[in-house]
Amino acid sequence: MPTLPKVLEPSGGERVAPAPSRTLPCVREGIGNVRHERDAYPPEGIGTFGRGEAAIRRMIVRGTVNRRGFLGTALALGGGVGLAPRGLFAAEAAKGAPNCEKLGWRFGITAYTFRHLALCEAAEQVAALGLRYIEGFTWQKLSARKPNVVTNETMATDDRKETKARLADLGVQLVSCYCQAMAQEDACRKLFDWAKEMGMEILVAEPPPAAYDMVGKLLDEYQLSLAVHNHPKPSGYWNPDVFLKAVEGRTKRIGVCGDTGHWARSGLKPADALRKLEGRIVSLHIKDIAKFDDPKCPCVAFGTGEGDLAGVAREIRRQGIKPFIAIEHEVNAPTVADVAACVAYFDKVAGE
Image (cartoon, rainbow, N blue to C red; front, side, top):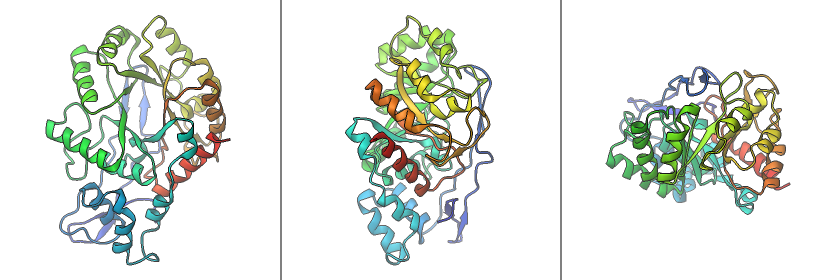
């Protein structure tokens, strides 16, 4: 299966979707400031569904098939076991994360891992992996059918209802969402209203400490949690000490979304950072990286780099906590098979 997904052309043929331009498409500029490259999304096909993996993906997104019919559809369109798309069989073979489930860990994927897709298509990949949890981000397109709708508080009522129904059909829960700004109360209320309506529990962001009083009040009112995220140094929250100082004496609803790969890129051992933040861990972004203490190093397949994911799993077990743990594999357009290997590795070390 090619690394980049294929999309349908109006002529009925297929072409390879464009890849995002960089491996790490976000640049931190201190606390609360972020620039993001806007990744391209494959256009919706025109006419019949066609054949092959692109057709199957489109049928699932449109609701023509769900996960229960996933393998049968792959067989039918692929022309038999020998001709069905290989990546789809790798996905169907993924049995989720049984060790994580035994530990009571909610283990899923960030939609940013599949950022070359829209949210509904990313959720399809999560379901194919045998997982049930996803984190969105507020500049992601909603679906291939509605490329002009973005996954945030600007969604119309009908789009919200349709999205909840689609996720429910896939068996995937939108647990959290990464947000770009959280500074003004009126804007925060709209964001929190949307998050609550969509069934979310956590909002991930990097607000300035000056906003903590206002945000903390709203978190208590809406019964939501804020998970403060870290990017590599020199970003504002790269060191856990910055967060711990800002959160002193504040509601426990303000916690961290610890990005283990960004800690390692910054020269911090992820397990040590988790130990320091004990009692404030709400969620985790887990990734493996090529080189410790190198802010610009790329992500690599789990277990092949210097991100010490085994140490991360041991520390989570030691603390006896059950945060939302999400893979964030920041490579260009990973295949389901790529991410399935990451799932399998972390589930293995979780059980050791």
